[in-house]
Length: 187
Image 1 (tube, rainbow, N blue to C red):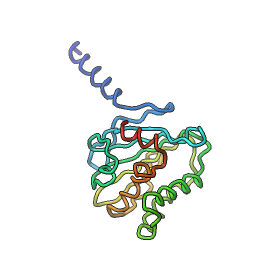
Image 2 (spheres, rainbow, N blue to C red):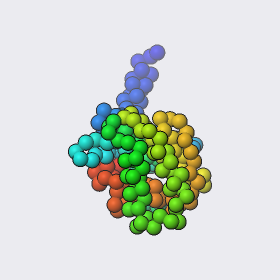
Image 3 (cartoon, one colour):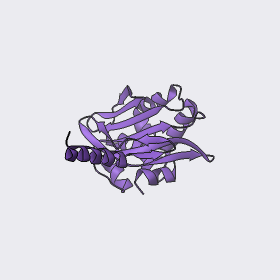
Image 4 (cartoon, rainbow, N blue to C red):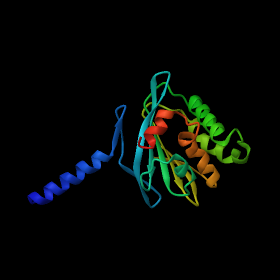
């Protein structure tokens, strides 16, 4: 392999690694797929509670943005990756936190979205362990695909209002955690 090719390959590898983000010992990949769309890591942060790291969250978009309202409103592919970094998190706590997030993002009006919310929360009813990774992937016209540790769990069919409610949990006016939101927005 000639020197120019080696230098080019090394430059590309370093550029890709530079766009990945490491938090709490977890590396958020620089990109991921939503159906046929390549998404880039917009930003990431750590969800803490009682001064303890709970999970690392990453937001993936088709193009970087720091505008939470526009991201929530957009009817386009996007994803959130949640990597559990605490063995203290339980399925009950995650389900409760997710339901609280839905209440916050819908202003407490859960009834119109009750069915997709219940289906979405179902994935958190399984036991959760440190190291588990959840991918929440919006695919317009299909719904939200949910993966646990790379294994497909379900597609939650829903309209744009449901997608907005899901992404509003982390990016809305009353987010799960303000510093996590800021990190996901790349700030």
